[in-house]
Structures are given as structure tokens and as C-alpha cells.
Amino acid sequence: MGFMRFVTWLVTNAVALAVAAWLFEGIWFSGPTKGQAEIEEKLLPLLVVALILGVVTAIVKPVLTLLSLPLVVLTVGLFLVVINAFMLQLTAWLSGKLDIGFHVDGFLTAVGGAIVITIVTWGVNLLIDR
Image 1 (tube, rainbow, N blue to C red):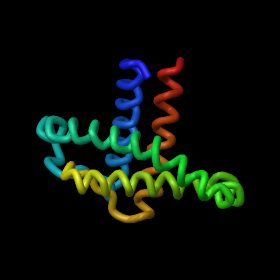
Image 2: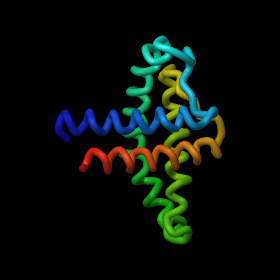
Image 3: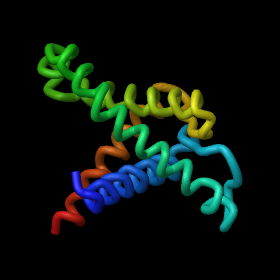
Image 4: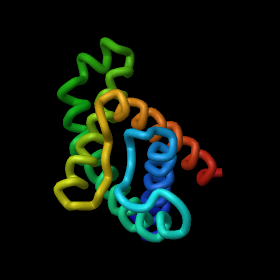
């Protein structure tokens, strides 16, 4: 993966995470909640969490998808939303272990966040490809 492709991938994940955190009270970063201080203190954690989410999705998701293939087929792919929600919760857990300050409160919030992240990532990729 070239450097620009990596940066594009990282920024796309960061934008998707930021939108999910903006839309859901249960997805949040520790620290200030307004103004320049919020941007300054949360930009690096946002990029690190985007990197963690990308790595978790690249490594863990294919294994879970393969193991749950009968459920994915049975639900016509809807079980992938559950897997994506788990990826988001796993990312929050790892972020907590690394003291990054990213939180996802509850499974339903993770499902909503996963849906938003998927849609935003798809939309950003569509814009970039054009």
C-alpha cells in the first residue's frame, strides 16, 4: 500500500469515526467537548483509533466472518452488521487498554455506530474514487 493510499484510508476511517461520535452520545472521546481545545486534544486520538479500527477490521473481521458464514448467509448478510459492531466494541476495548480515551457505550450504540461508519466510509470512498 502506497503512502498516499494509507493516508487516504486512515483519514477515511477517522472521518467515519468522527461522524459516528458526533451522531451518537454513546460513542465519544475523553476530553474537552467544544472549541479549538477539543480539536487539538482529540485529533491524534481520533487518528490512532482509526488506525486501531482498521487493523482490527483487517485481521479479526475476516476470521469472524468466515466462522459465522452460515449466519451471514442465513441473514442475507445482515449478520455482518453485528460483526462490524463487535469490531467497534473491540476497538474501544483496545483503546481503553492503551489509555486513548475512546468509548462505545453498549451494543446497540455499537450497531448504530457500525452502520454509520460503514455508510460514511462507503460515501467517502465513492467521492475519492471519482
